[in-house]
Image (cartoon, rainbow, N blue to C red; front, side):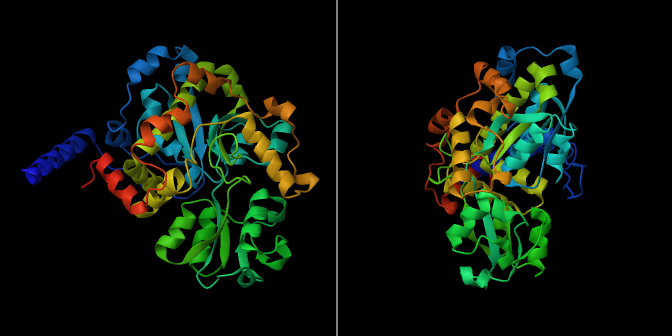
Length: 412
């Protein structure tokens, strides 16, 4: 009887997917400025988000006519910390909250935000972004996104020790010695910080990986999915990790600042109700990552053009193995930790953030996120304690995670 019940449920599920779909999702290319929305993705994944959108919209501030017609330009790049953007599109979260939008994957997120060409973007945040803001770039941190570090040094399989790295071809960036992340990785591995000890290249994560796979590089630094991809394909391994804080805490005020949801300051000012909805969508997208990990992995796979197995391992790493690293938290304590990391590694003054704790309002605009909280967006620690810990506890092995993830999303 159990077998027939399972088969019946599967048939029903397949029928629902067929009825809900009118096309197939498209695989994105890596070309700059590519719009990555596939046909019928909202229909394919939207029903899996157990959210009462009518109740949420009832307490959210009403959109003005101008806000209803505004197309929000949202950007992200090929880094696992940015996956909330693709989830917001693919699962229909933006649309269900009444947000008109255009989601673009590009390696030039920073340039687009500095030029005012995007309304919001998932982006890293370092001293360079502070400098840009101080020089008039019209953006600020609107919300936390990835406070836990998790930045890797990936090397070829024949490199086992720090000595093996000397003289090797590494895509770590010519300014690596001035960054907290490389200093932390170098200490963890025991290799020199000074880049003159290596043949150094400046490249994007996506390009680094395929150059590495082709044997043109001996190692590179990156976010996932590229570290997990290297280990999945057996072409390399992660030798060192930067956590962004001396305590290795990956969420909460003692974690640093790695990736944020940035927003254009004019957008925040001129479209306040729409900005509040965007912050709520950000929360719902991250909730989806934790509550529907297998479906999130399928979305990840399509948008980042990697195998689902790599996506699953990356998600497991980010939400279990390394802690609850992807989250929507941001507090003053995160900035304190961020400054402390620059002090810890004696970062040169020219590369130290031109900012003090008394000037955070220059770079941090939390009003839209605070309004989302007032409208019912949940507190992250409470969400984890009530919704995630009972289902996907810290310490779960990848195999255990896979089993539960399939059960959650009805994967045979």
